Length: 453
Image (cartoon, rainbow, N blue to C red; front, side, top):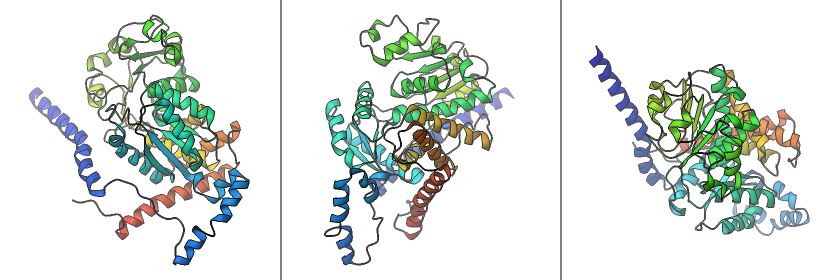
């Protein structure tokens, strides 16, 4: 009997590993087949060549003159109000590290696809062949007039923090770093529901964050605003637990040193193993696994522990291993496992709402509004150990998220226009529905080729 159970368990693990490897095998073939994932198509009719006199010269001179008199008119006469530029230098691509500008392009094209299909937002990937912080900042400022927002993506730390802060202060359009705000928003939503499911409260749990990159530093900040206590947080970087004795961090100063002083009230030292002892929650956003977090370390966590292993492409610990070690709820960043904690649930709806009120920035409170709406949607649909967040298939996620974000922007006074909740929902729903139906129509008509078998 024991031998049979062992064989069944082994087969199950092998099957899950095969499933985990499948997307990577198919991706290379299909990326080559389609030669990329996005293209530009007209949104205005061209019934004859005479129409170019309207869309181009001489007719186009009239909107140009209107915008010259009033720069905000650009939102009325162009696509600026529905466009985002995705900017990256390829210095931290997914969990793969510094791959360079060309190798980062497939990721940014994929991001643009998600923006359009899930949020109805036109997004343009721009890879920069420079690692210079100042050149990236200058480039973003130079191209900003063409776009309603800037999405910084896959830029190494600490450069990403400095670029984000500078651009937010120097531009009057929203600047978003998805590795920071996007990850933090969705993690917060997931954790709110996970903690509720196990019968605890956010301000009464001990949280260990494995990794101190852009994602977890932003997550710590957002969780604090949502109600978590910094003194009950422990953060681990590649050299160990953050504490007031980390002279290597003190010499650099900045946000990481602030976290050394504000977290880890018990002054713990050591590594991931020590940081997880007795913890209620583990939020890992470090390096691709498996084996970064070991089963025996999860066993030392509190009863009904929550483990988010969010590294891509492989989580820090396989979800079934975390479950076997006693974790009650396990989440990863992958769509092929239960409880996907993925930025795709955040940025399309957040930017939809931001653009719909022409917001000048995206505040932490707007991110919290999105997180709480995500959590609420999941609760309405019914929580379980394997369902703490809605999925991308849940149609109402993105327009509802957009309304929550837009409403908070109006409340905080960072919106250029004010609309009612009904107006916001109707517009967001119609724009997103149009994007999805357009994609389906192009596939059914053959303008998007069916993938090869």
